Length: 122
Image 1 (cartoon, rainbow, N blue to C red):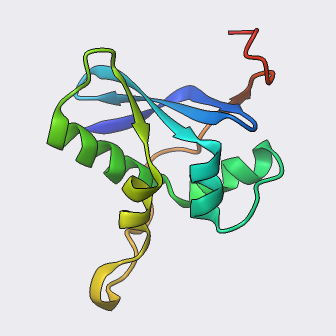
Image 2: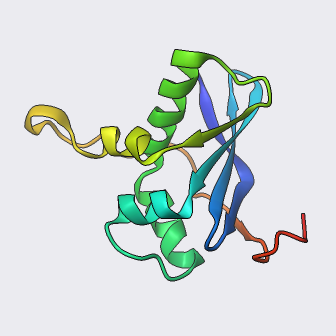
């Protein structure tokens, strides 16, 4: 399964969610992560979009694996949208039995676009 983060495919809507648009085997899928989930993964409150971008950058590999795992288990959703839970991401956060972390994801940097809190501009 080939997964690519789409350029300019990340929308951060503080304090609601982050939307990631990815291509999975030529299907566009929107993966959403709730703000509370991001805070839980970060282990601290997230103050702004720059902190969220750093978190996403640091966990790109884990996020990609979580998306792949959900799609492998359930297939591409009819609406081409899925919500990643804290459990989806936490399962990938700690390497089992003292192994190394997942490593770097070999894609260019993530591009971020900000949306107003009310979501009016799309």
